[in-house]
Structure formats: C-alpha cells, structure tokens
Length: 341
Ligand code: TXA
Ligand code: MG
Image 1: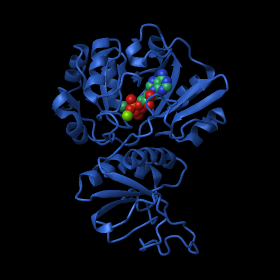
Image 2: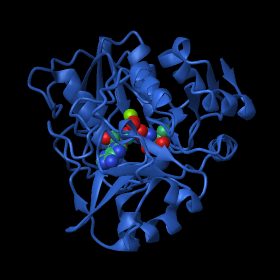
Image 3: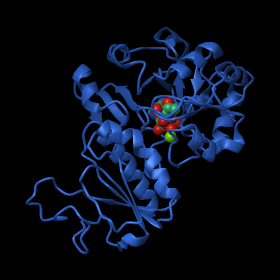
Image 4: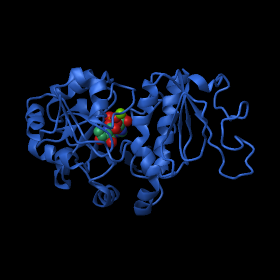
C-alpha cells in the first residue's frame, strides 16, 4: 500500500516490519537496524546475499555514537558540510549494531538522508534504520513509490510516499583508510565537491569482480534487456565518429563487437545532443539541455521505462565523466556488464 502516513510507517517498523521509505537519492527498503530479525527480512525480501552490508540511516548528527565507535576528523568535516545529504561514510562500528547489518565487518556505513519524511520517520521510530535501495537484488533502483510497488509491492505492508526522488542516484560512499580517504561508490554527491573539502580521494570504484564495497558487484543496476554502451559524439564538429550526431549505419563506436544495431527494435538512452536518431523504437533524453543533475533525477526512471518498452535491446550513451556523470557512468558500466554476460 502506498501511503503518506508517517506514524503508521513508524509503528510498522517498531513492530519489526519492513517499509519502503523515500530519500532524496532512491527509495530504501527500511528495517529497524537494532532488530536483527527485521534486518533479516530485508535480505530475504530483496533476495540480497548477506555478505552485502546495509547502510544505517540517522536523522541527526548527535545519533552518531549509537552506531559508530569513532568519528575521524575528515569524516566529521564531511558530515558537517554535507549531511543531511547523499553521502555515506564508513566508520568503525558500535558493538550494538547487529553483525547482520554490517555483514560481520568491523565497520558500519552511515548516512543522514535529506528527505524530510525520512528524517521525521527516523525520529518517530527512535532507532536507526538499515535501508538498502528498495529493488530486488541487482535490479534498477526505484525513484518513485510506483516503481517500488512494481519491485516489492506484494512483499511489504507499506510504501511511504515522498514523491519523486530529487537526486535520483544512490549516495556517494567514502571510507577512511590509513592511506587516506577512498571512494567506494560514486553517487549523488560529486567527487569534486568532496575533494574541495578534504583533498584528493583515492578511486577504488572501477567495476571489478572482487568489490571494495561488498555490494559493488560487477553486474548491478541491471535492466532485464541487454544494454550496450555507446561513446557519445565528440562535441567538436570535426569529429569523424558519429558525424552529424545521427546514428549512422556503420559509424557507431560500438562498445561490443557482438552488437548488431537494428534501431527498429532498440531503445536509446541519450543526453543532450550526444546521439539521436528517429529510427529507434524509443529514445529517451536524460537532459536535452545537458544538465547532469536533471539527468540523474531521470536516470533510473528512464532506464526502467526503456526496460518496460517494446524495445528488445537497449543502448545508452556514456555521459561526461564529471559531477553526477561519474555516478551514472559507473551504473551504466555495471548494467551493461550484466547484460553482456
Ligand atoms: O542512497 C543510498 O545510499 C540508498 C538510500 C536508500 O539511502 N541506499 C543504498 O543502499 O544505495 P544499497 O544497499 O543499495 O547500497 C549500499 C552499499 C553497498 O554497496 C554496500 O556494499 C556498501 O554500501 N556498504 C555497506 N556497508 C559497508 C561497509 N561497512 N563497508 C563498505 N561498504 C559498505
Ligand atoms: Mg542498491
């Protein structure tokens, strides 16, 4: 059931039920982080392996000592600057956080979401909430209550309706290693913005089989259809690649040699003027004006729409690799890896 009743959601969570909650990034599937059986339900509803730990959500900075045993200076600087917001910090865990939440790791992932309904809910529950994205494991993250309903509607008693997620991609995850801070997942807070506060951050986020963040498996965020990545047209007019920006017959810089493009049954996810063609069965533009924030807000919804369309295969252009473009590119790489295998 989709509802705006925060008190009802809080009561269900206190009883050990799982509830889908809005955040500014994506919808989360929440459980009381201190009730291990409720947390176990999150894993079983999602079909998520228990080696993949969850993010713990707080409403206020002064709850931090309930879940973390230390708060390094660099983490504190980021928390003060960017919380509430799309940033997750990996911190040494407080012993009362159940091992199931952290998959047995000595660290815990923590974030204060910016969505006012999420924070009010947290205050009413009066416990931290463990919440992964509210999709079945490996699938496209939901950014609307309707998308959650399609994914998990028959498995949970309530979806708290907070409207369309404003940011649209998951939080950026930072860990503090002896060698310095490291990026575990590109996300809704741009790397450049974080580096402006604490200096250079090590990049560990290349897609790989052995993930740094345990959940960053190579195939993730996957539509059910095959997805191929295209290099967008170079913006310089002399670019020999795709010429006029239309989809030429043999001129596509295709990622996969196996991909035989037949636009009539293919869907295209594009950005600005990177690539366009009337020939695709469906073309969705993340942001005709090339605004990366607008693109991120549309990202998962448009992927989902293409996945549900009559198109048999999907193409997506790589985005400019800065700001929120980095987060979207990382997700497209994973989505296409799953498709290719
Ligand atoms: O924006 C978000 O972060 C959303 C909303 C709901 O808050 N949540 C989200 O959760 O994206 P999820 O479960 O889809 O992704 C959590 C990521 C996983 O890649 C997991 O491996 C990583 O965080 N993670 C959790 N605890 C960790 C830890 N102790 N060390 C390293 N990575 C951790
Ligand atoms: Mg997820």
